[in-house]
Image (cartoon, rainbow, N blue to C red; front, side, top):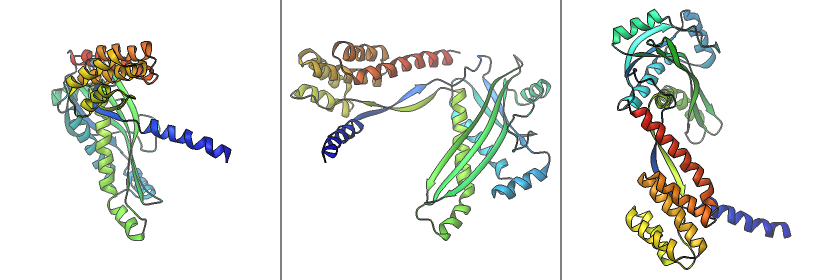
Length: 326
């Protein structure tokens, strides 16, 4: 009984921490790779056609795939990449229906690269600066216990730069999407087989979006913990409420007043909240100033980890600006 009486308060504290209020907003993050300045437009091709059709039949028999399902899915993956880059300021994409023979879906290795003569011919044909080639591709679909559907797309993609005659990106990855379809019955299992193609199409599209983020800066949603109350300080609480209604100027006025007049814990919480407000406004240096004050001057522990987030964001924004300054 004694152990239980100790455990309950600890669990309560942990719950309160996990349930701390958060502000959610979008931030821009850099492309994974730095695409050279001379690459403005790229064309995308499918290099996953298996020359020996017997392999296609074998794979279809082993995994339950419809013949040609993966071929359609590669085009949908291209749709996802194209959508991600449609309004990109770094590089745009031309979809093509070009198909080239590649490696076996059973092979772990990338096929031999296309020759630079072939790459240059494709660039001339489509009037582009580079070629993005899907060179490995496979899909799987599972109906799990509990009626969970899981669609998996595995892809290997290369980015060919004919100007430097180099492969500037060779990326192999796996993307999963899952759904819960309710109670597992014979009827739901049959429905799952019918919806398999739709699930693979959605997973393929999202896999394309994921690859597009390698080539262009993109938006990402983040959450930041903030403080809603500080004991006995109504001005601080007002500042938190103004944050919740997106009145940033009123929030800053109230929180600055709380920093000036509150006790040490209130000052730390107010400084932390000010850092969150300034980050939302995009003023990362001011956000860093207040997070440093919250931790360094007022010993607010939550602000110490927040400083790491802000330093990372400052570096990310500098890289985004570099990528967009072309």
